[in-house]
Image 1: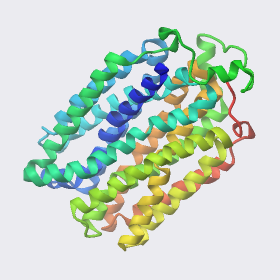
Image 2: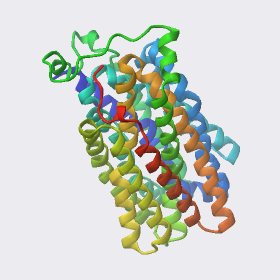
Image 3: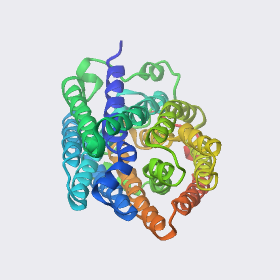
Image 4: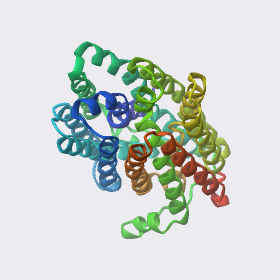
Length: 414
């Protein structure tokens, strides 16, 4: 078996720890944690915003560090920070302490997830990157699948302090993942005497001939910031971050406090999103390899807009379930497509830096979304208007995707 498949498995685990558990674990813990610390919706949103600000702070730096130093070292340190600060979140006694811990968790997530996604460009040739990235982001789905039933069970067994034990449990899982990454991850196929997976297709003429080598040093970094396509993708990524994080952060809170779902029922529906979203990353990553990155981005954004609309206006279990299914079908597709697009546009060497740059804008959207939604909910007395705002942002992303230049219709080999 090619060692690249083991690297891909580690990428799945890294995404599970840095995103699936560290970020989306908060979705299920939030109702109990909010009650335990006496938080308003605005403060609950601020905790999510703090996590995204931390992610934003390290996303760009993490990509550059991985390009200059060992991606393995950067990813391992990031995961250790994620696990440790999640445990510390469970020890928080007030809002300020929880905010600090959630911010530090976000920093660790950005410092581990972004370099890992960029590293896949070194292990997979262009025609395999979409599928590889799609598989990697299934780690987020696993986070939903794990926390959906696990957190309600811990809450039921532990009572009022259950939210603390939930943080301890999932934080410990991330620390175990960090150990595996440290032991098994490799930075380049050459360390194992291998070529990237799919490289044989290039040698046999199945893919277009690779373009000339890119400039080195400052000239190479400038390619990231001078690329019009990269800036255009950044806008789409920001809109995605703003809209999806509103839905994901307040999913369980909305179902529990406004729709009358129990914590276990909300957890089961969250688990359904997780199972369905596994197919989303595989499907859209594969389709983007065939159709290019442009039209899949538009289709996904349109489906998410419908999911947010239904969540806001459909008060029946059937309507809420359809919304969850629509979101699950597209949940992690855009990160997979973006990671592949970075490799297409700037090659394997600069893919981590390019993805870090895009993730800077994703982080901005994610940082703004929860605070805006929390304020809207406190003023309106409901999260429904916040979901409608998310829908509007997703519709703008549809238009922006359709306006991408023709050069993104087909991937280019590197």
